[in-house]
Image 1 (cartoon, rainbow, N blue to C red):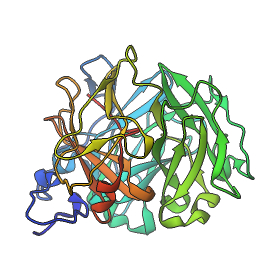
Image 2 (cartoon, one colour):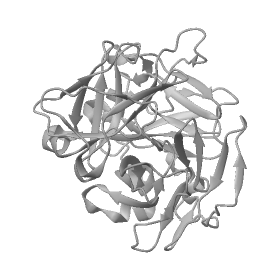
Image 3 (cartoon, one colour):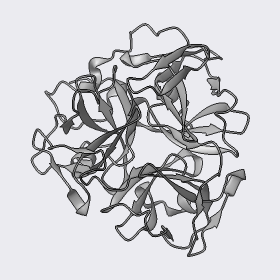
Image 4 (cartoon, rainbow, N blue to C red):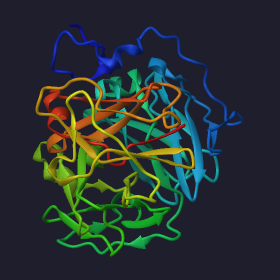
Length: 367
C-alpha cells in the first residue's frame, strides 16, 4: 500500500490509514485574519491569525490558524502549509506574546518533529528537525501548542545534577497549577544526568507520566515524571547531548488526578489496545473551558492498528486534528483526532513504537 507523507510511517499493509482522509490535493482555505473571531462551544474565544509570506490555512482537512488566551496561557490551533521558503508564517497579537523567547514542539508532515520559535515580538518561526524544511512546508500543525505569557504566579523549580536555567535567552524553569492542570515554563541545559528536578509537593501526577519535549536544534525529547514528582529528561535515540545543549519545558502540561470530581471522564481502550502500560494512568478526557485535555497512555500486544479510544460526544474537534505525542523509548509520534471522536496513534518511525507505548499526557485541542 502506498502511503501519503502526512500519514506517518505505519508498518502494516492492507489497512486504510486514517490519516489519509486528508489529501494533498485539497484546496487550502483562505488565510485567517486577526479580526476573525471564532467562539468555542464553551465560550473560549479564538482569534484568527493573519498568515504571511505565502503560508496558507487548513491543509489536509484541518482548520484555520487561530490563538486564544485563558488564565495567562496562550493556546494555538489549526494547521498551515506553504510552497515558499520563508519560515515566518504569522505574528501573534499584542497580549499573546511571551515575556522571553520560547521554543514549543509541533508536529509536521509524516508525523515528523518540528518546533515553533516565538520571541517577545511575537514573530513566529517554524523550524523542522534536521533542517528538513519540506516537512514544515507540507504540513505544520499548531494544535496542542500552549505557553504562558509571563512568569506571574509560577513557582520556580530547584534544579539538580548540574542543570542550569534559561539558556538561549529563555526563562527559568517553573510550574503553576491552574484548575488542577500543571503548566511548565522555561528551559534548562548542561545537566550531568537525566534527573533534572523534583516537583514541589502537590504538583506531581497521580501516576507516572511521559510527555514530549523540544531539545537542541528542534530534536525530540521526553520528560518522565514519577508519582513522587522526580523529573528526568530523555533524548530520542539516546542522544543525551541534545538535552544537555537545550531542553525546553514550554508547552508541557498535564492533569493532576483523574479521580471522581476532577472533571475527567475515563475511557476504555478499543480495538485491542489497553490502558495503563508502564504504571501510567488509564485514558481520560476533560473539557476545560473549551480546551479538551487528555491524559493516560495505551499500548497493544496484539498488533492492533485501529483507533485507540473514542472521545465522547461534546469532546470532539470539528475537523481532523493532529497533536504531538510521546511514543515507546521517547520516539517521535502524534495522535490524529477526528470529528467522530476516534483517536489514532501515528509514528514517524516503525508503527511498533506506537504499539509499544503511546502517551496521551499533554495532548490537548480546542473545540
